[in-house]
Image (cartoon, rainbow, N blue to C red; front, side, top):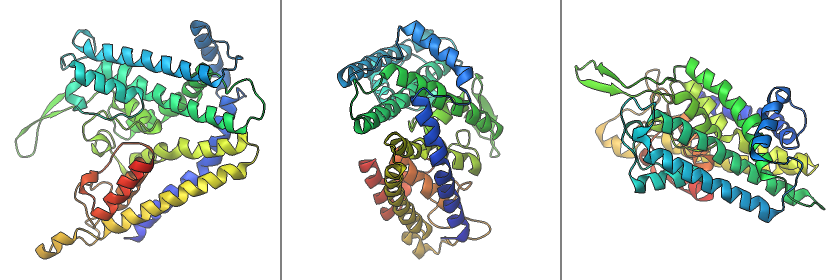
Length: 379
């Protein structure tokens, strides 16, 4: 455990606290249909979506109607994603000529992404073409996250309304969440990711020769656009098999920090939404405090465990002490560009809220691994 590690943890925590109230206020105004800085720009698009879908934005839905709308949308999304995977061979933007996905895997992947689970039983860069990644998986990263947020808002309305004919309109909540929250953040952060070195193209894989003279195939593609919603929507399913441990999916310590903030930002903001809608922000801060305490305990436990190194290495005189040349601690399964402290925070946050990884959780020591499993069970 080093002062640098603690400073990085403190910086992350301070930023989360700082963005919670502004983000909560913004989301409250979005779902209430009130003015926001980008509303004049996107309001015509919102109205056009309602017109195309025949939605009356002033109509309130009862909870059974809200639920039926959600289920209908989920079934339609499943069928669309399944069809895209099965027909992949015939679709454009498939420079590696990936074949159609076999039925069982296509079914598994469709269920996973439609439900915001994003379990992947395949190697993305050698299985999915770019159109399936963009029009299939990335789109469902957006809409599955929007469905979850819409449900949270409907739940807040149900708790706080005393007399009402409904709990909102699913189609309106879905549209507003996507247009005003997920899309703007994703566009801005995706540009930042590209600036930091993340690929965003439709080019085929590149063949390279390593320093040892071996041949290597380097995958690329529309990574940044999928990566940002992967973490913002707490999806977890990555463009590459190594997920956020891959240098193309998380190239720098700065992108790693931003990804951690995206993983937890909306969840933190929703606590403030609860307080604002209930007209007592203390309620939201109480919930935020409980979540923060649990997260802090998890981060400290994992960081303490991982920073002490693997005791099995002591017999081999392996130096695991931090120095100017190494991060120290248990670095097995971790990226040297991140080190133990950021990897510990990322692992704790993602098992609380998401599913992405910037380090291999199997390589964490027993105590740290136990915290991650508990988070998965509770999150």
